[in-house]
Image (cartoon, rainbow over all chains, first blue to last red; front, side, top):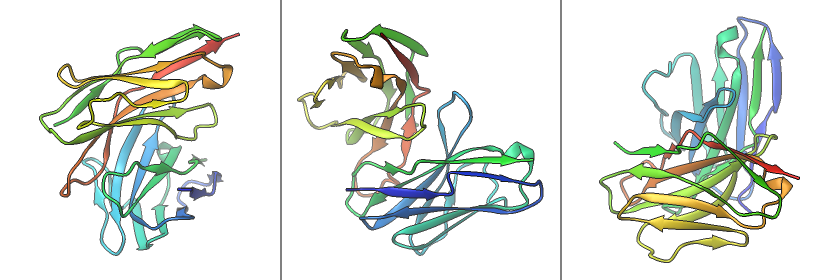
Length: 116
Length: 117
């Protein structure tokens, strides 16, 4: 149980394009989803927290217009990197937790984003 | 603000031996949860073990156990009978409990563990 699917696993695109990453909870309803960014050999950096049906809460220093997050249903959240540039290249991971308080986060397999 | 510290950037252990990874944290909260996650080379984040702060008994999951010292704010992970598949990055994480929290994690910087054949 508690499976989170993230798609795509790897994407390469040209500078200036927008890229959408999907995060789905397959067997539970995710009232809260989280988006992280991870640089090589470093820890996970929380970018934003999204709750179903409301606007995402972004961490300090994260550009909300650059990283658009939508959590339109209890099983799907999307992260769109707009007008991507090489410095946006990174590993992005989503996680989700169900409606029960104090439950652990369940992570997707991550998306490796490379901007040329 | 809460902080999580993992003071061992890298460790190695011989196969079948036991290794302990350290984690300390700082918080003024009384209700919180602690987790250990494993991230193998595939980069998938896998929950290893969790501990509720209100529980005095240390959590165990097969070969994995924790030494939770609440007063010292210490939460170490012991891996017994280490296996090659245990080679991974290990992250300690703190989460505030209660009904008003955002349920977000505070991660440590990680410990890279290598199990040697």
